[in-house]
Amino acid sequence: MDINCDLGEGLDNDAKLMPFLDSCNIACGGHAGDEESMRHTVRLAKIFKVKPGAHPSYPDTLHFGRKVMDISIQVLKAQVIHQIQTLIKICEEEKYPLHHIKPHGALYNELAKNHELALMFCDLMEENFFNYVLYCPPHSIIEEIARQRGITVMLEVFADRNYNEDYSLVSRTQPDAVLTDKEEALAHVKRIMEEKRIKTLSGLFISIYADTLCIHGDNPNALEILKLIRKSLTF
Image (cartoon, rainbow, N blue to C red; front, side):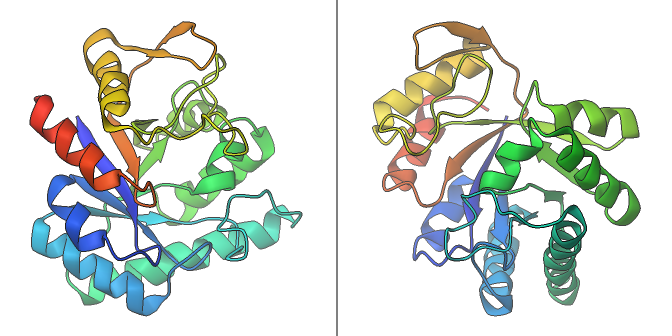
């Protein structure tokens, strides 16, 4: 099981988290980050042999990419391509190739359920980034379309987020959206790995399969959660 984390988002914990990761998703200017922070994170990933990925989003630093923007499909597509290409260029300069692409925040959630947006994203993957892996949620529209197009997919489940019965993430507007208690997060991850299921916020269990687990870098207890998962589980 791969463990990934969203990094390069302006926090000071990237170097502390990196030793516990297999892959990382680097903010590339949409919701956070600039060329300097991208380069710094790529260099850290290279030191710790962590696979770097692009983490494109709605172009919305004001809301950290966590609100759906009312912009055209064409503008959004151009913005996402620019974000990914900027990071690819830095990876090439640092001689440490990009491994994957994982959408961020509201864009990630919309791609799971919005057919038009998912088509657009798979178009840009197919046209520009076909050789990269796509990290996406299981039981989502984007997974279905990507597989039809022959795009390599890794299914992602969040170690520190609660789920609804339809496999969507509980909205961050709700108090129980994020798991910050490390023991609670560990129990959540153990169910995913050992029982192939998730306990939803309503108490219902739903079946799940994951190739990669994500811990958010901005989770206040991200480091403690990562340490406990690495200590307690065999990957």
